[in-house]
Length: 154
Image 1: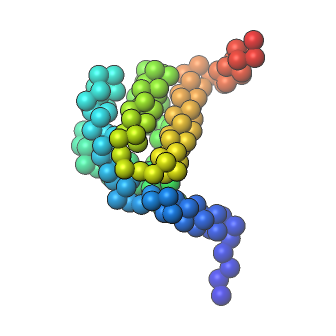
Image 2: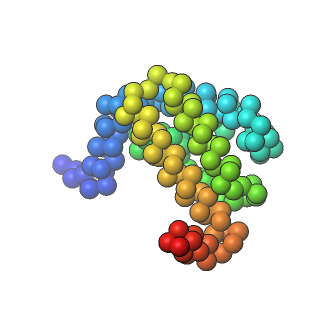
């Protein structure tokens, strides 16, 4: 008999909870397709994506795998989003704010239940904050994080 590890049990629980909320591959596929449709039409984000995504079919497949890994613990996504976003250059808070705004609009216009939508919102907020901080640290050095804290406490 194989004993499951704590990590395996935690992943299984997260997957079960997501599925109970109605999150599955079909929901993720629809969400990603609608979101990137909006992104491609967006005046701020569209040109950035168009200059970096040569073929949308594999990109959308990767994004579906990414969100399945985030929400369902599928483990299908392999890659380093931080390096990809750093390589774009010029990304800043305004870009991530717009990304989140479009993401939330896509969630609001979908058929997700509130719990599932909140799960996607919270994950997107964590991802955006993490990517933005990584970009700032790469661009401005490690002092960026401590300077931000100092400014907030003033």
